[in-house]
Amino acid sequence: MRFLRTWLEPRTPAAVLLALAVGGFVVVAHEVAAGATLDMDRAIMLALHPQPDGGGPMWLQSMMRDASALGSTLGLSLVVCLAVLFLLLSRRGSMALFVLASALEVLLSTLLKGLFRGRGRT
Image 1 (tube, rainbow, N blue to C red):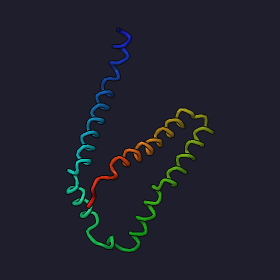
Image 2 (image 1 turned 180 degrees about the vertical axis):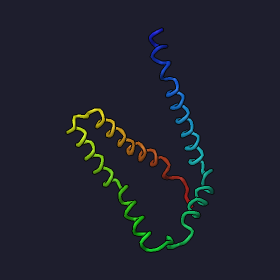
Image 3 (image 1 turned 135 degrees about the vertical axis):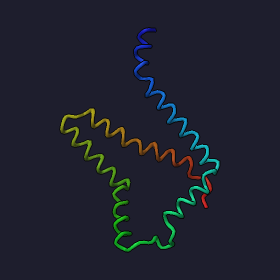
Image 4 (image 1 turned 60 degrees about the vertical axis):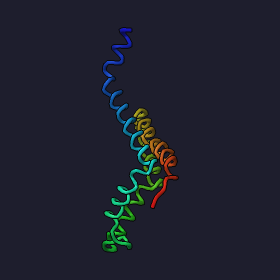
């Protein structure tokens, strides 16, 4: 019992933070699934894109398109693979594993987004 207490005691703040994060996600996910956030979503989208053509000068639109392409699945996968390869060649296996695990978050995010894809959008 003493071992369990000494093992758990320093991890209590992290466990509380994790429980709060999971609870917060569940509450927000419930609100999104129920459609309670549609008005707010629409207001934010209209505030960010008030003009039908996207607005702004052509150079800004081109720059934003190029910047968003860097965040594509292919671009991010390439960067992650190169970073993991570099870390492995540098004999930093634990850091390579950390980068790889962080990148797998994208898979989890994609799966969770798939759960909410069917909600009504106007």
